[in-house]
Length: 148
Image (tube, rainbow, N blue to C red; front, side):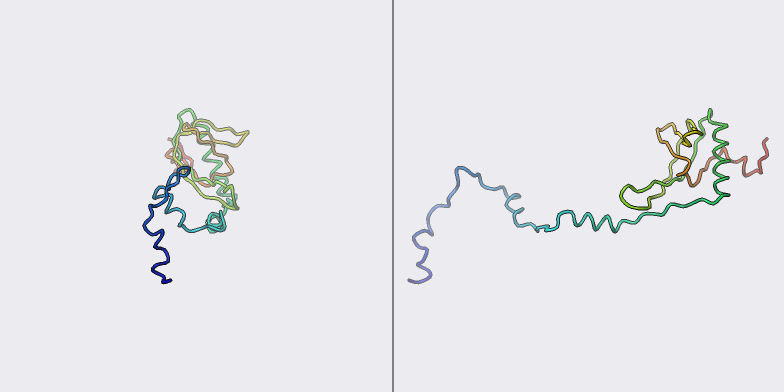
């Protein structure tokens, strides 16, 4: 028997279509040939390990005094709801370090007991996370403490 004659009895039969299982859609059919990820989650772990975080800056005594003086000025003028631009540190939840963020908002309240500043947009920042505060109300510090 020749190879060409081997399938002559079935070659012209109609293609079988199951009544129980509908045929796959093209996308599903193609998906069965997609690459296999043997280590589920491995890419995420590698990405997380490669993600770089910043180290928290420990302020020296002089910088802490400047921030405390600025917070006192904000406290004295809190009824005006002064607009502040604050740079602060946010600790990373998954690894050591974190990142520095900057926000601009109007101060609403300062809680000296909890050591937190509240803003009108709902933001609340602990004093210990603040690295820098900028505002036009601090011009008094630049003038050497002289008030006009």
